[in-house]
Amino acid sequence: MTLIHAVTTHNKSLYEDQLAQYFRLRHDVFVSERGWEQLRRPDGVERDEYDNLNAVYLLALDGERVVGGQRLYPTALPHMMSEVFPGLATRGVPRAASILECTRYFVVKERRTGRTDCRLLAAMQEYCLEAGISAVTAVVEMWWLPRWQQVGFKVRPLGLPTLIENEPCMAALIEVSQRSLDQVRQVAGLRGSSLHRENAAATHYERVPHVAA
Image (cartoon, rainbow, N blue to C red; front, side):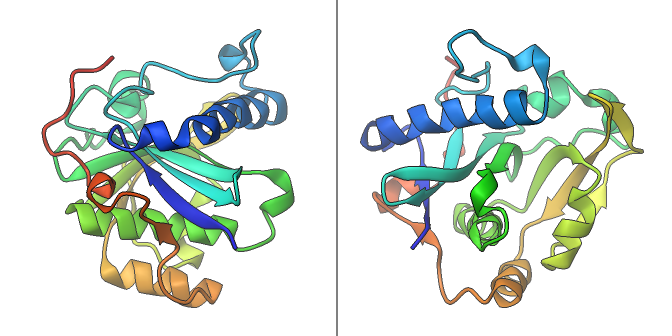
């Protein structure tokens, strides 16, 4: 069964192989599939300045194989929306210790018709609830809005859609709540937690951010 593993600076040494897979898959998905040419690298590995000690990764693992993932990052620090896409958030870029940004979300092609997507969305809500996070921001393609609404998420657009890489995109804020977690589990027929805690102490978000590497 696919489980979602929370990987932080505290337990990342246990996931070196899986993180290497995740960064290669990011290049496959966002460059080879979606055509984001500015991310192309000769080594086929997609990493950026936000892949540092402050990042938390939720990795969907089928055994040792990565089949999906996402990155959470503190908005109290300079982050992708504040530094790269501030123009999308015409209502202001939300920044607080209780708000994280979600980026680099994907599910591998052959798992997009199953429950992996819902497990990742449920794990995001569960992880954030445990860590005292009230909301998550994201810059996404417009098709994400009905998807989030379908699984019962409460979403607030932060501005009007804008074309990015020839795709209409928007900045949005997702409310974190037990109700949203319960709804996505119900929609997907998930029973109980999908979030695996290899090291329980390591799954909690650090309120005092590290200096970016």
